Length: 118
Image (cartoon, rainbow, N blue to C red):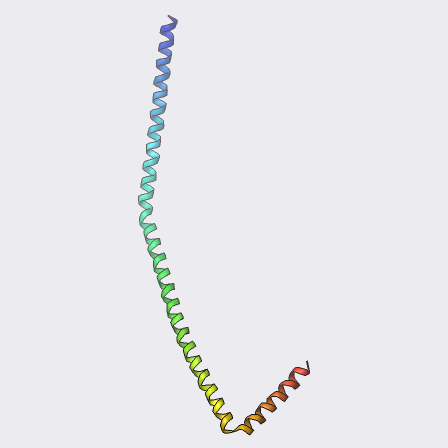
C-alpha cells in the first residue's frame, strides 16, 4: 500500500512539474514572440536613423573636402603673392640701393627704440 501511495504521489508531482515546465516554456515562447515583434517594429526606425547618420557623415565629408580644396587653393595663391612681393622687393633694392639702405636704417632705429623702452 505504501508503494502504491508513493507511486501515485510521484505521478501527481511529475504531472505538476510537467505543467509548470509547460507553463514556463509557454511564457518563454511568448516573451520570444514579443521580442521578435518589437524588433520588427523597431527595424524601420533603426533603418531611417542609420540612413540619416550616413547622409550626415556624407555631408560633413563633402564640406570638409570643399574646405580643404579652398584652403589648398588659397595657400597656393598666398605662396604666389609672397614670391611676387619678394621679387618686387629685390628689384627695388637693386634699382634704389641708397633708398633701400635708408629705409632699412630707419626701420632698425625705430625697432630698437620701441623694443628698448620696454
